Image 1 (spheres, chains in turn yellow, purple):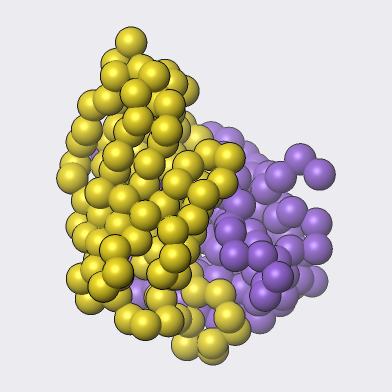
Image 2: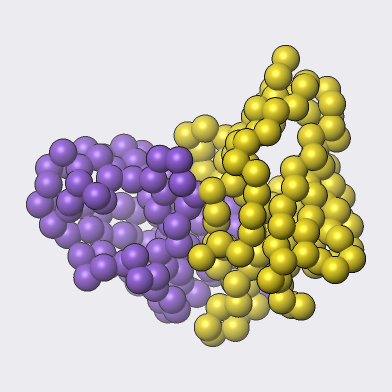
Length: 115
Length: 114
């Protein structure tokens, strides 16, 4: 079962920052927070991940609270192409502990960018 | 490298028939995942391989489902005696462990059972 809670939908005006929240109150100390998005009829696309420090890449920023119970994905200047379902995922340790865990998706947040 | 490739993109089959899907991961990726996604839901984990070894299977993977990765490269997912409830998008993803931490997904195979 997914270990995260996200709002089912959000709207954001084009050009503004989109802030997508995620709650993961039961996260374990060694679990990472991952964000993926899925544009209609495509496979999910990796965005960013982090453990406890804030992270930034060319796509987005990830802000993780100090207690690690929640996080926010920030798309700094949203465009129409950012319209998608965004998934916040906490990685589940695999039984073989190979170092990467399977991704358990919830239902995500459907983000709509408004022109 | 063109990314993760899945074939076919679409499959329509009659109930009771067997179907097989293929996934070609990114070259040299040692980890391969299969997911299933129904309308309005997030992808559900089915199984994954580390090289040719199948390391974990979801309870969703009934006896009618079987996945293989015989040479540690491409993988196949077979569904026997298909049911209407098997209609879904079947997604494949690959990653290189432990160096990389992101999984790359294919475009999926959309199965419709009539």
